Length: 108
Image (cartoon, rainbow, N blue to C red):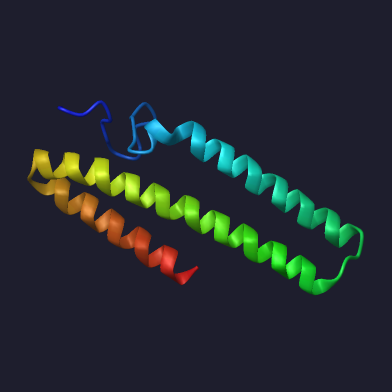
């Protein structure tokens, strides 16, 4: 394959996925989100104002949405492109996966 990023079946735990080049950035973002969630727990424990807690929950939702959109973008740039180059049923499978992921994401 021309690309260092090899996208394989999601059951293969040794596959290199489209996000691999951004792994550290994603992990840093998720750690920040984890800290935000702990902050929300602390706010509830300290019985802080409801609206302030809801504001923080909205910030976490927004941050998670950005991570999800980034992962989706990376998947399309790498995994879908690789599947298109391979041709055959692999592309149809990847397109269905993306379509299903978008449907799940839009319901959230």
